[in-house]
Image 1 (tube, one colour):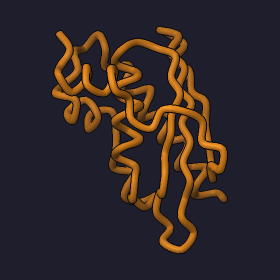
Image 2: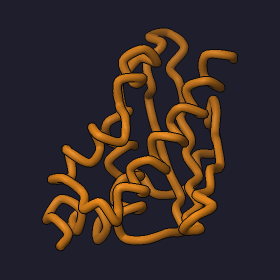
Image 3: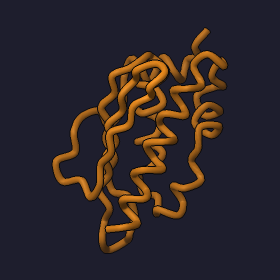
Length: 122
């Protein structure tokens, strides 16, 4: 059974779409389930905070919900603050994902790790 939070983020995803002026972007695939996640962020140079984050996801309900939540959580965070977001955190924020769908939170966390590495290297 999916939580109300998962259904809300799936039915009304936040920050979906490409980010043309992104500071960094990544494409990550889960080879087991085939879900694909594009994640992008724009860093505000003056504050060194994430001003905007967007995603595109081809995947299950939970993958879309995790990606949507991730973009909400990234807004206004520094790179350092964003490193604390992981699969367990996303799952908890969505009411606890069933074990069969925890791969969705891991996909979002993997994308975030790659994105943050690109943002640090810029």
